[in-house]
Length: 209
Image (cartoon, rainbow, N blue to C red; front, top):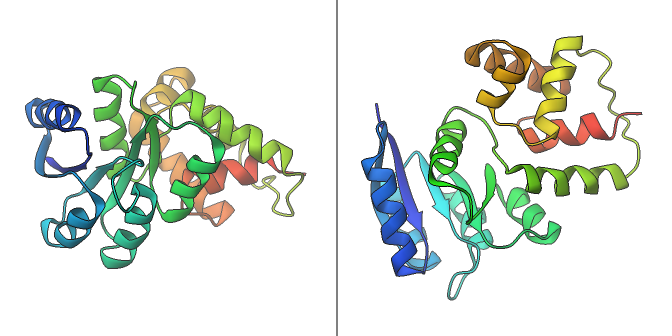
């Protein structure tokens, strides 16, 4: 079945371009578009897309607050931020609000589609640049009381790749393992670390004592 996507973006030209890219891609379907958070919040729980591509800088309510409220209204809908902002405050605000991924608007169409599919499969994609900012922030935060010694060597390798911002496909290629095997390793990592997101897993990995 196709991954259904809704777009929340105030730039009309960009919104139309994204809708066209998504609708023309095999395995994807753009089912709705909104120019502001207020309209999106009212309609998205009824639209029930698999993934929402969300902008941060919207007129009126911003995208971060929209994600936070949407998460309360429809927990099953996943959100990917696509924005020009790459400062840690916006990144962490978006992730804390419940965003499953954070990408920059200069991200290529193929990478965006890959990220949307990854979110739909349970991942939390970030561009390498964004992931580096996140990891640098965690490294400054000091040691954690949550060790990762119970991870196997291969799980440590997979988690290290996650911390560098690799997508699942890239991890599979780098480590010479299957795409579905990567998913299996990540599921085990989440279980062992008692986390639910890529960001939480990376935080524990980088702040290990």
